[in-house]
Image (spheres, rainbow, N blue to C red):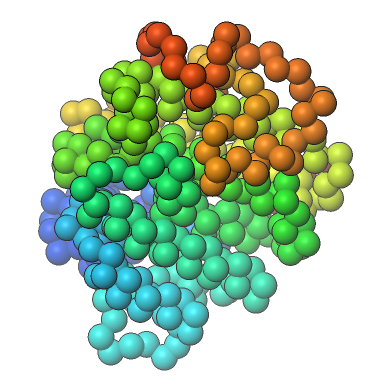
Length: 374
């Protein structure tokens, strides 16, 4: 964890309250307990203080935006398209200010200008595109919420990796670390796959932790567990087991593919590969303690789901077309199928068993990352 965690959290909460993002005192109190500093310090422990302050402020705005416009409101795709398009233009051209800015647009303008003090033009361009990916995902998410039936597993996987807000987060990693990635490295198919896997792992892990909160506060069942239950006719406990197996198979692929490309990665790319792992693990550590996701809501008792091995470590791709291309990047000759499962539950049904939690993921510890990211 970054040593400035308390200062980062205090600064981001004070700033959030000054922005008047929410009119409800109860909602402001809820957000103040979200531990933005902890999320930032755990997911980017290598970061420099200046950029990390902007990252924590961004987290505060996105959490408020999520509650106000997305999963805990009667948002429509039409309304979100209008709101997010205005926000996107503010990020593309932050000055001059608009006289009728929404509080969230004004706050994001401030974050954008603050990031410009620490980022190169190329880094700002990548972050802006990451925000475009996220905001377009919010519109798709709103359309899914208005449909009578839940989306398919394939549509959900494609939508949720965008709407979770990870695209701008991964674009901040080299800014926070004080180095700059080469576009040619980021465009390598295997690096793109690892980036999308990070988005997806955080999105699915968020589903495991936030499902009770969403159902209790908003009657919302748009999450991987319920989508699987609908599509495959599973009971919730069985669907949770299969969702966790899907998650573990992606986590296993992430570790194998990162190991595969490590010898052919330069210093900056290695820093980025380590940073992806930090975010996956840091998010899990933060979510297990965050009051936002506790049951009953508002307590802060840590939830530990860890186990020593993945429930599914097969190198075979999941039957989800939106993400199946990730497995094409893996040199499968290096990995025998070693899964302890006798059949692939994602292709064949089997008897339900006890729920299996996700395997603990290693974030840092890979040698060779430049001291500039420390």
